[in-house]
Image 1 (cartoon, helix red, strand yellow):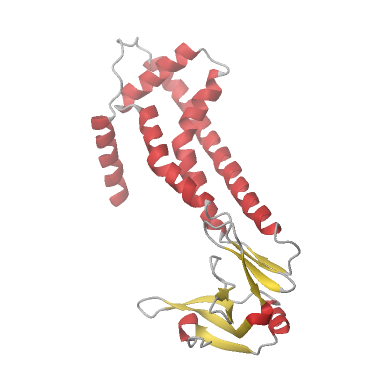
Image 2: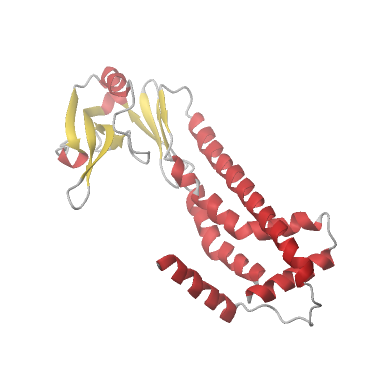
Amino acid sequence: MIVPAAVIIALGLLRKYLPARKTSPLPRLDEDFTGMQWAVSISMLLVGLAFVLLVHKALVTANHYFAEADGPAMFQFAPSNAIWWFFPGFGALCSSWEITLLLWSLFEDRNRIARYVAWSDERNGFDSTRALRWMALFIAMPIAVITLLAIPIHSTLCDDSIVVGHYARLNRQRLPYSEARRLVLVDGFRDRSGKFTPRAGVIVDFHDGSRWSSSANRDFKSEADPGLPEFLQRKTGLPLEQAETEADIPAYRR
C-alpha cells in the first residue's frame, strides 16, 4: 500500500513543481508517437540494464585492483557484493532516459525527438528531463559518492600481517601477526530482540587494541572460511577460542 501511495504523491508533486513546459500547440501526433513509445521504453530498459551491469563491473574491478595492490595474499576478503548495486540501480533510473535520447539522436532528426519529448511530457503532466536531472543530483549523486568511498574496503592476509582497507581511507592499516593477542571463532550475532543469526567469522585482537573480523562488511556465512582458522593459528601461535557471538568475548586488557 505504501509504494502505490508514494508513486501517486510523487507524480502529484512533479506535476505541481515541474510541470511540462509550455509549447506551441502540438499537432495530433498520438497515433505516430504512441507506437514509438513502446520502442523508447524498451530501449530505456536495455540502456538501463547495460548501465547497471557495466557500472557494477567497474566498481567491483576497482575494489579488486585496490586490494591487489597489497601484493601476494594467502586470503583476500572483499566487501559484500550487494553494496555495488545501489549506485548502478539509481544511476540507471536517473540516466537511461537521456542516454536513450542521445543514442536516438544519432539516427533520428533532433526536431522530431524534441517533439516526442514535448508530447511525452504533456501526456505525463511534468517535465521528465528536469525531474530526472534533479533526481540524479539529489539521489544518484550522493549514492555515487558514498559508493566510491567504499572502494578501499578489503582485507588481505599477507605472509606477515593483515592489511585492512577502510571506508573513505586510502591509507591501509597493517596488523602484524606478531602483535596478535587473542584468536576467537564466533558463530553469529544476536539482534536487539535476542534472536540469534548465524554469521561465522574469525576475530583477532591485537596488542594495540585493534580488532579484525573476517566477517566484517561481508555476506553472512554459517561457517568460517575454509582453512582460515588454521592459517591464523599458525601465523599467530595462539589457541583458537570459541564464542557464540562477538558480544560474548571479554574485553581485551593490554
